[in-house]
Length: 249
Image (cartoon, rainbow, N blue to C red):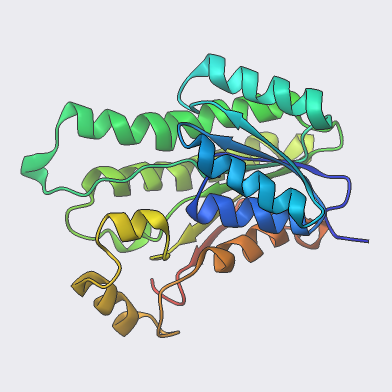
């Protein structure tokens, strides 16, 4: 039997990149997966089609995690389609780098609303919809909270908040048998890092040079860790922040 058979998983921001990779890997492991997206319906539908073509179960549900009504609808549709939730992956996130002189209110709120408020609202919705036996919450942080690169004050602050929230909620939700852990990836090759110009850049070369494993990551590298954290294989793990950057720290 597949290790996530009969499990229901919600992955936020799953229309592309790391989220899409996680959604597909969870489905491959047997979970019924809800592919949440904010704006890229085509991307989400493609992920669902790939999962279904491979014999899995998935639906796409639109909604911004920073909007309470959207989050409520996300979990209502999840429960209606598949039943109580077992796994939440808080993957939805945005990033913008900028020196201190470039920081604006818009720059700040754009990132904090999605990366922090969105994570809290999605978790709130999941907790109310979780299987009575408990489950697993997997937050997607970033190694930036540890390596704090120049020009990332706001983004690093949001991911530092994700680390703190992970530790708080692990203690808060442990009595309900809900485990809370964070995966903090290093640079991953995704549509987003290509669009931002990171792939093939000097930063890319520097990352490969300073990463002990000698390369940047792929979405599947993170997805495999997510499957582990979603499964009973990690039943004794909570309150952990896993640096997943090929050894960067």
